[in-house]
Length: 238
Image 1 (cartoon, rainbow, N blue to C red):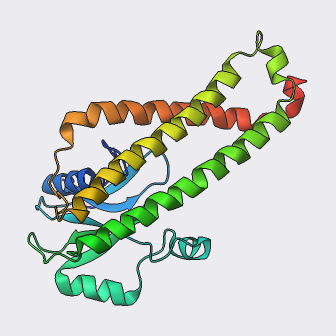
Image 2 (image 1 turned 180 degrees about the vertical axis):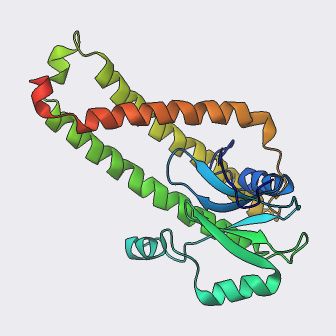
């Protein structure tokens, strides 16, 4: 076994399912795969091979504010040094950034929990959802503008080019569906935290793995096709 080997895996659960992501990463560590970084495309995660250990993972919200300035400042960057020092004191190390969360890995198999205040956890999750809710309509509006500007005669040529409008509509529905699922999940999670029910860091992820892998494959193909449409010159449709 080459301990310096890098292995790529696709996240087999929803990226917003905090508990399942933590559980999956912990299971990967038990197989000797340790997260190095999370790719930005298609849910790809990069792991380093090593000796199998049951090291736990935790996702900690990176948002102290929902302002655009705050989000752009922390997006993809490590936590402040004070947070890193505190995490190290509790037995955790920072390893990656994932969609509004700092990902930490335990340096021992039973580190002390970093976040135990469920009220603060719930508040952080609410902020993350509303941040996503704000930017999905903006992204769809930009895509729509590009689509209608570059394909002004598209709907007059549906018989000859029926695929492109369908792909565009599917992409919009996929984005809205994901936002709705995220809202339902986060709402249930926040309610549980408000009731004093702690996060389940060992939530079973395997029962729904095939479903989520299929969804990710569909979204990846759809994204590539829509990107091609987005980049096509207007002259092709005139």
